[in-house]
Length: 130
Ligand SMILES: [Zn+2]
Image (cartoon, rainbow, N blue to C red; front, top):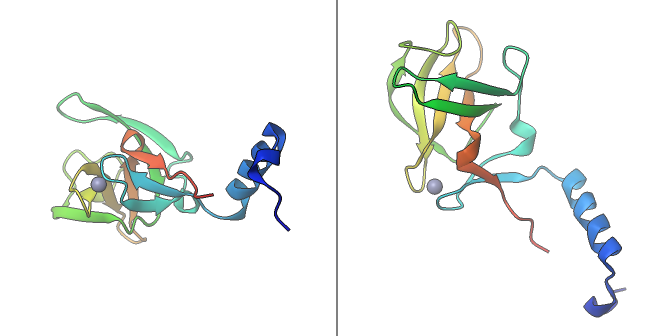
């Protein structure tokens, strides 16, 4: 049974938001084009933590989060181990499959599944539809 929207008190709206956060994994989308990149439940820890801050040889600092799968990414170039941030891991550049914005890197360990290090500023939580 539905009641009119004008009867929704602020407290009821707040409760609905919390319920949607726990019931399914939120999607993380490209900030430039809103293409779905990965989901909240793909977050993993590498070297003991999900988030890492790295500086590349050009002195640009990136704040990244580690994700197992990121189906919204495309990849550029061959794997390389030059200046790798995770010891023993080869990497390649990951971009948005839709708009080609740079989203981060895919890291390939020698004997395990690859994971993604994605620039957190280039992703945002998709606003859940109501
Ligand atoms: Zn995009």
